[in-house]
Length: 428
Image (cartoon, rainbow, N blue to C red; front, top):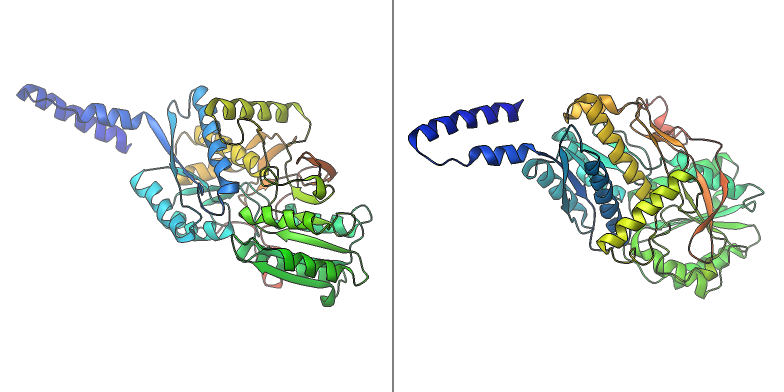
């Protein structure tokens, strides 16, 4: 309504100006501004998280191009506004404000780490704008202004550890919880400790270790894991290492000959993209838990991979123009943008509250092979869970999966303080 009103005022001004013989440029400028819908893309394109996040920027632009080629949204083209918060957590908040206040983005797709999401959360809530967050996380959060298209702990971490404890997964009895030192690994491991305790695992059979972002020397940590594993019981490593530290971690696993048959590692933040710079031959059999793998066979995924491959080659995207890869957060980004576009069409508006209402129950055919559904209440997708073994070519062989999509449980049942909490965002 504001744009229409402004356009009418400008038209009246033009008529007056024409009568006075004055050249006016206000109307064409406003008309041009009304021709597009601005959307924000908030991902680290530099710094320690660029290894994971840059490709999410690219897949967001691909998805926006796809939607625009089909007529856009509400008859208007989407105009992406890309910013680089540079793996700097306070800068994420500044860039979020810029996208909303200066660039007038009606929605933002972005963030990877939970510390970046926590940084921007007050901004989106204060300004009543929308963030679509595409990465697995620790739960323990539910915001009216965020749609979580990655996994909650019960859609990744818990099933992965259950698998490790099963006969098929090696019957692990001892666990190393190894992560980057920030909120996601520490909270996830708090949940996993409580889960393991509920399964009868003793405190002495669990060790935790954390390293800072960008850490590169894993020699002593791998040696410590080998010693812990040598004390009798079957041991497994649960890795919540994030960013470019995964490259030296996996290289050191290979250097010290820590094979999956001896001590399997299951990772929650390592997919096809993170393994690109690693010799994966010594890592065969180590695991990752996600809700999507590139290796999944179905027509929807075949089309998704081809779409990305063609786009990457056409745009000359570094690494991907020669070896295009897809991964879980890419799929979650793709799903989130499409669902938002569908919700806007349903609401006939980009207004935040109207889009939130229209997002409830949205569905989209996912490359992972299931129809993804946005929960009607808790702002999380219903997602299948897959566990894959690393292959020599850097792809994953799916060794276990859920029968169908799992409903997210943002407030973990294994955290005592969560008793009685409802999985519905509070209205503020």
